Length: 475
Ligand code: CS2
Image (cartoon, rainbow, N blue to C red; front, side):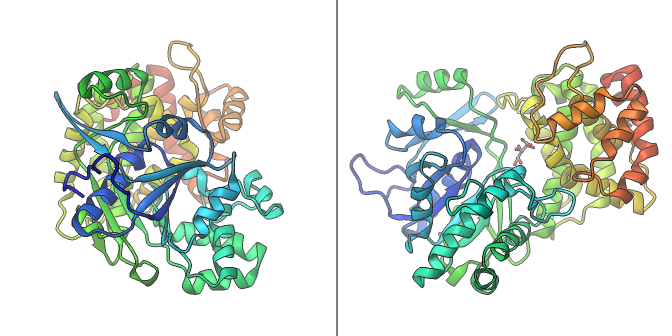
């Protein structure tokens, strides 16, 4: 294969070695590119079968173009396009769960990777354990054809055990702390409820390396599609657009060592990814969420627009000053330099990453993005007014009404609960008290400690509005 990853027309693609669950824009602009580069450098049969766990949109868009698509790097005014040809097929789980299980059970498949977002783990975000009351998990306990990501993993591993095959490596690529360990726990909890011997086999022979993934990849819009068609002259119903920056730190712990040569593609293969993961989740995703809620309430559509507003740029810097004491830098990394680089990445004007998109699923994201940092700061008696304002802004946003009285399209598995709790409260202090009672998000001790500082933040936010409140807490 040529070094640019282009497969010549009519060339035979590498056989499938990876099944990927949750084939969204992020993995197509990130993991697929690494795998293409790894095969270009070192060969191997690491073709990918993508699985959509919900809708057929990606499959429908890619089917007519032989599963190939354009990856576009956006760097200010510069656009670099590249054709990515590592997908061998895309399956839609609700249409044909049997085909998904068969693909995962194929002994040629050595890795099942996942980007199913935080809520796809069906866990309790506050504890990290499987939520056995989750409707999808209840379904998967009662049926052999699953609907959830943990269900597919457990049932496919069950088939491999029965067939005498080795397990696949389960490679979580979601923004969760210790993502591999959380997923291992969730899979073992479910497997144990189905068959304890299966759980024992997975525990002893399975591998769940943790990873830290990073590339800002907003959802592709119809405008993007039209623009990329005009740029390349080749119609593409599913291009992906992303920033130049990319970082993948992966624990090098795969079943029988079987994996693509990801190091040749630029991934960092490490013994322990925890430091990378904490830094990225707290410094990047924490400020991303904080800027999404405050920026949205202040009337900004995208993160680039948000940090182009000097008030919010100063707020971002203040957030980092509160976050850095609660982060241990990975060896050789300077946290202030990392923060500077993040601000430059956020400011990339070509990346139209909507505050509304990042604001989605706050109940699933806040624990690892903001609440862990707040907990550490509380324990060390460090005041965190900027972080508290971010959590208050999420509470305001989740109430579903913006500062001009307009409706907010809140997307969150707990959206109904959040809205009801807000509607039944008449003051900011009551909103804070009500939402802090959600035990899936706030453990009781943290809720008690946050009551006073969050109330203070909420009272300012409700009375002066997001822009002024942000200014008050910024250095
Ligand atoms: C974002 C992330 O949508 C979100 O919640 O914070 O998708 C973010 O862009 C990536 O984690 C960057 O690597």
